[in-house]
Length: 296
Image (cartoon, rainbow, N blue to C red):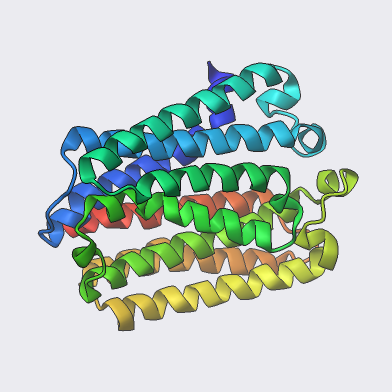
């Protein structure tokens, strides 16, 4: 069972679920917004998103078995703890259940774009694992967009469309979307640099292989600095929240990002990419938990 949970990347799935809960029970309540879904339907929709994400992780590892023998030998499929045939079965079952749930939710809402969207995401995740991942930059941007989408998808269908695009509401949604996208993009570049040996052996053309580690360090350094700048001015100028939220985001997110910049600058030729990847994951978790502050 532990091998299966590792295959699904359960911490990432838990992060998505926490984001859904906080958007529903903290963010929406704060702005006194109505909900299109009752509690059961909300949890079902969240579950469908999580199933698709888990299935995406499964198919990604299936296509990555050879590279994982070099980069991540502890992965369940690379170790042979889970048979590929069983992984394929779980992949199809998870996606099938997710689509069934989306049909049910769409029928209740009379809003069929959810079915189209979820099927589209399933197809894109498969193509990403099979082909897009090896296309420099495009693969990173695509998966980062899907991560951002997974956080706010439930929010979009749980709210009235007019409320979602209300200027005051949408600026918050845009802020969290940009944060999730950009933080994950930087983390994808860090992971690709960490995996450069295995990707090169399998002729997977990632950005670090194209430009080299030195230039990737510079890119991650600059992109992280820009992210800090955008988040800081986004909080102070664009959102203009209360003091508690501002301090939380500055000390909880911006300062750890400065630590990433510092580690790259100090250890330019011996960067600990695994550490930086973990720091970015923690930063994303801290950013998601900022949604709790809407209850204060």
